[in-house]
Length: 205
Image (cartoon, rainbow, N blue to C red):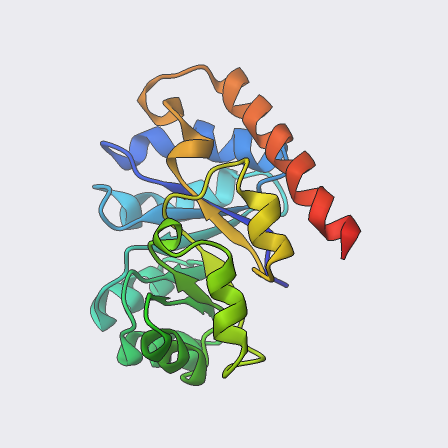
C-alpha cells in the first residue's frame, strides 16, 4: 500500500531528523524519505525507525548506486527513492522485495523505471510539466503509477491526485524550517492542512 504523501527530509545532519519524523507521523504523514545527501542518514536509520511512532515508514532517498541501495536495505529502509532511472538499483530493490520509486522525467525514463518493476515512478521535477503530464503518459502507458516530486506545494496536491498521481512527494513546502530549529507546531499544522487537501480529491474519486 502506497502512502498518499511522502515527506522528503534534507538536513545539515541526520541528528535533526528524529523530532521531525515524530511530528510528521503523529499528524498523518507516515511515509518519510531520509536523503543520502544528508550526513549520517544510514548510521541513524535503525534508531529512527525504532523510535518512530507506530505505522511510520522510513525510506532512504537520493540513492544513486547499487552499493548505496544495498547499504540502505541492510539498515532496514522501508523503501528506496532515486533521482534517476538506474535499472540496477531498481533490480536490487525488486529482488529484496522492497518498494522502489525511481526518478525520471521523459516518457522513456519513466517507462523504463516502471517496466523494470518499480512500485511507482517519481516524476521529477514535476513542476516543470504540471499535472496534465500524467494524462499524456497514461495514453501509451495506461497502468503507470506516478508520484510527482519537485516544486509541488500543499495547494497543488489536490490537482495532482485528481490528475491520477498515486501519491505526492513534498519537501520544503511541507517541512519548512523544521529541520533548522523551526516551530514544530507549525509543521504539525501544515501536516493537518495537507491531510485535508489530500482527502478532497480522494473523496471525489
